[in-house]
Length: 427
Ligand SMILES: *Cc1c(COP(=O)(O)O)cnc(C)c1O
Image (cartoon, rainbow, N blue to C red):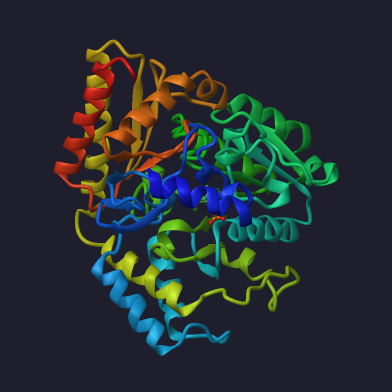
């Protein structure tokens, strides 16, 4: 911890709170963030040389683990050819073809450099295409930090008890209607009241930024029906769930087609790649074909695309998602069994390669229930697990991630560590 403490002190002199993204600062759980020196497979090593089994995975992208040789080789080869051209390359077509082939409802796709850019662009496109202003989002869902979407958002925004941000004009937020996740009645009511003005509904088909909250059966189906009925664009924000919950993302898992889909995280394999795509008629409204402007100096960056392509090749291996889902499920079952054996109120859930752990008896179905989790207990658990060499997300409001590098040994070791923590009463 000594090196991390030193680095943290130094970082705070020139970087606000010492971090370049808020949740990294450990404010929710207290203590000093680990400064990471390197990663390999399922493990990371901190600045003091201590090893941890990593369940953060760079917050989702590292689905094949750290430093996979195929990904590293692809990046090295791409870098040799040049870092950026600001002109089209063949690899951009390749990744677009892969995405359109594997993700349902993608006729066309455009690359950007982050999930935030993808959702921001999708919202603008939906508004431009429909000629309407109102967007609907759900409480606790996070869609990046564009103004219109920073209303009752999850993730870091939740951790700090500031569901909205200062600096967002009231007029901007006024066009964003926030509804309860998994609440069909509220949704029906909103469409009854103002259906003709609704440009888009944006949803995390599996919410992963208020811890993990799975959609209740029927919720996404009803959402699809209402959007179709009222001519609103349905946007599945699959920045987290894309290539995470299944090969074709949540659309494939639940058999529902969105009009627009946003992607990020896994599709860049650890380098900055985002994407938004969907129905051809909607995508044709983008400049230079249409009137909706969208651009990016480093969009489709060749080195980032190479990392994405190599990762997307690996996840297409037969049985990849079965094994990934089994790892997450076995982890959740093991943790729950251990907690119950020691009388700790606890539950866990997983969807594909993402999971949630909750210090309450049953998995939450919406933001209000997420807030009922015992945060103090989580914070104790987090630090106790860290001391055991298990690196969980440093907030009770984040989902966890397994990678294909998390084998039976890592999962077993994690359950063993949790058992020790629960039995000592600190859980
Ligand atoms: C991470 C995330 C984003 C934002 O992506 P960035 O690359 O961090 O800008 C948007 N939507 C969802 C669902 C996410 O999980």
